[in-house]
Amino acid sequence: MSIAQIAPREGYAKSLIEIAKTNDKIVVLDGDCAKSNLTNLFGAEYPDRFFNMGIAEQDIVGTAAGLALGGKIPFANAYANFLTGRAWDQMRISVCYSNLNVKIVGHNAGTSAAQEGATHLPFEDIALMRALPRMTVIVPCDSVEMEKAVKAAAEFEGPVYLRVGKLPAPVVTNEQDPFAIGKARILREGQDVTIISTGILLYEALQAADQLQADGISAEVIHCATIKPLDLDTIAASAAKTKRVVTVEEHSIVGGLTGAVAEGLTRVQPTLMRSVGNLDRFGFSGKMDELLDLLGMRAVNVIQAVHEIVEQPVRNESCQ
Image (cartoon, rainbow, N blue to C red; front, side, top):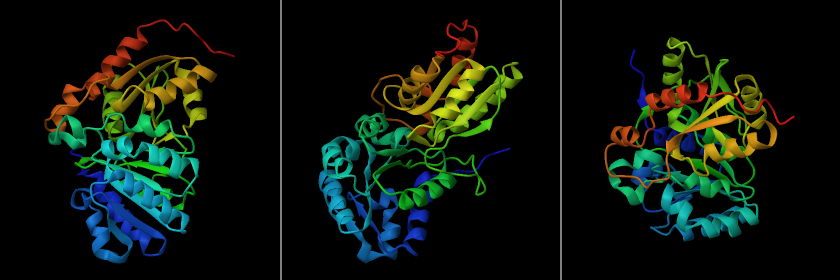
């Protein structure tokens, strides 16, 4: 059966317009890429609450901080790698140190930048945002969950980073699925290994779990839409049961989901781990499917990692 594919940016734009109907504090800033980010739809609906700041990521964040001081809830939009990289100092001092209610929205996330080339492919944005004190980091898995994440971010008081993909991705959640900032979801229970995913690679993780079941391996699948704060209670409980963890992310394995899970489990439940993600490389120009294959972000890569780890003896039962 084919699965629907919708661009996460569509869910972002739809939700943003919807919440603005009842919340006049919502304002949107964009870095001259509104057509690509679909924030042009918000601008058409609310022209007096939309500001095209030009290709000036640092000004976007600084202005958003000022608007937050004035009581607004600004959503600051630009391409993820340029926004999180160039405006990191403004986020650190003007937004996070000051604990302002600014929503940072990184578009063209991960492989969805695709044919725009290596310089536009962000695989380090989550790591940069995780390092900022007070910053909450949300990475929805599909367009439906993106709609819920936007509403939750608007209601949340404080800095939030929201990662948005440009190109169509499989829709694996539905309207009835719960969403709460800081809460992971166990989508499939298992006994032999825990697969923890974030973002659009949840689809690949679920596909891998189906194949592993056919191979006689019972995989528990946990979806972490929030990477910071991480739901360590849920993850540690699963790791204590399965003794093995494989993380899956459309990001560098340095500083993203892998780093967050490893840092947490090291403290409370040391566990054998493997990682599926970008192995510390820059991106390449190509189609999104080609990049997912080339960078090893497919179900087949998850399956390989699981087979490797289940064949290893467990060296640490627990730190307790």
